[in-house]
Image (cartoon, rainbow, N blue to C red; front, side, top):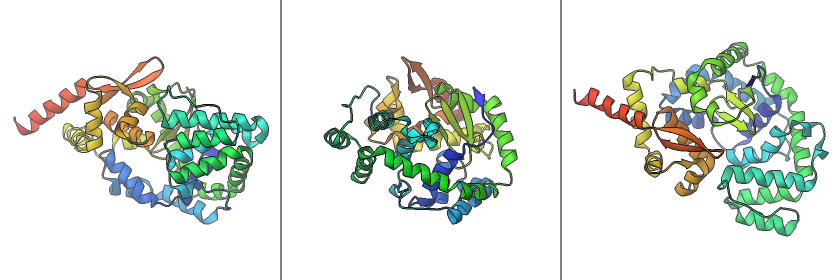
Length: 339
C-alpha cells in the first residue's frame, strides 16, 4: 500500500464545501459521533478539534460560492459522497470533462448508487434517456428531495460536473488560506504515517476489509475512513478516536465500551441478526431499514468493541459474532460484579 504524505486538495475542498453549506451544527454532530465510539465527546473535541475548527471556519469565511453547489444544502453525507465519487475516483476529469460520454457518466453514477444503497446483486436497466432516468430514479430508496437532485444530475451530467469542478477550482485560494490555520499539520501528517504503518487496530478493523493500493490523509474527514475503489482517505484523528484519549485498554473502560454498544437497540438487533448467519453491510442495512452509511457506523462501533469481526467470502465482507469478544465481556462482568 502506497502511503501518500500530502492532503488530496480536491477531496479537502469538496468536503469543506459540504460541511460549510450543510444545514447542521458540525460541532454537535462530531461530538455525537465521538460519543458513539465510547469517548467523552465534548472533552475530546476540546482537546483535538481547535485547529480543525479554524480550518473549517476560515474556509467558510473565504469561500467563493455560487448556486452550482447545492449538495451541502441537501444535508445528506451519503448522497454527497455518491455524487462526488465520480470526481474523486477520476481526477483526470478536472483537466478534461469530456473523458466520459454522457451515458458513461450516467452508468458510473448508477453503479455508485447500487454499491452504496442496494444489495450487491441488485441490477437496474441502463440509464440512457429521460424515460429510463425517470424509471431508475423512481426505484431508488432516496427521499423525494434527493430523487429530484439525482434526476437533475442524470439529465445533464457533464454541465453539472463542470460546474462542480469550477466550484472546486474557484475555492483553491480559500482552501490554502484555511490550511494555514492548521499549525500542527506537520505533526498530524507524521502521526498519520506512523498510524498507517503500525496501528494494528486500524489495520484489522479498517484496512483489512478493502484492497487499498493508495492511502491519503484527510483533515476535513478527520474522524472517518473513506474508501473509493482502491484508494483510502484516513482521517488524521481516527487513530486516536479508535484507541481513545481515555484509557480504553483498561478492562473497565473496555467493559463500559461494550456495554454502551449493547445499550443501543440497533446495534443489539444487529448482533441478534448475525448470531446464526454472517451478513454483509447492505444486507443488514436493508433488514434494519437504515441507510448504508448509518449501518457502517454501527458496524465500526461493534468492531471497535470487539463484539463482531469480519469474514471475507466470494469478494464480499461479512460480519460475524466475535465469540471471544462476547466471552471477554462475560468474564469482565464476573470480575467486577461477582468476584
